[in-house]
Length: 174
Ligand SMILES: Cc1cc2nc3c(=O)[nH]c(=O)nc-3n(C[C@H](O)[C@H](O)[C@H](O)COP(=O)(O)O)c2cc1C
Image (cartoon, rainbow, N blue to C red):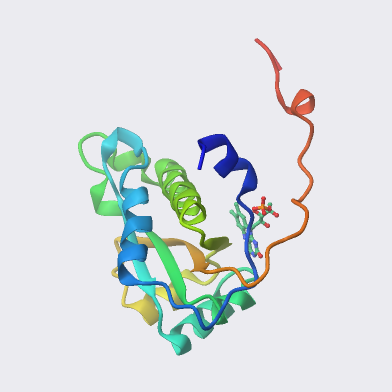
């Protein structure tokens, strides 16, 4: 799939085929796309917890923003940022780089999944403490977002509206 086609045709998927599992190999391919995302200073702080256990996914659904579909998506990818990786001049800017590094990795995984015919939906982590306990995440690793992953059972018929390009692009100054 052409890169522009992939970018424009990707949609957030909220309906998943519960009966179509995602193979470990496919999960690895998708997480590998995150490995190639840019990171500040190439510190590579991203870590991903792949959860397929139904009970755990249901708990994750209750701890994230709005993600009831985590109950149906066969996999939940919990994207974390390892704060100990911010070394050599990056120690004091952890909070600054964390959301940027995580978001770049998430976007790569969303496009990789889409390219393989799978769907994803990005959910914010609300209760970090509870997710830490649930998944045994150590203190220096920050759970950032959850990505639902699976084969879509339904795709949105029309994409959510985008602002016109002329409205968002500014040349030279705002
Ligand atoms: C940081 C972030 C958090 C999001 N959180 C949720 C969420 O909690 N639940 C949800 O259903 N979608 C969530 N989304 C998906 C957006 O609603 C979606 O990307 C947007 O409506 C555009 O639709 P599209 O992804 O199909 O183009 C989130 C997206 C981002 C980037």
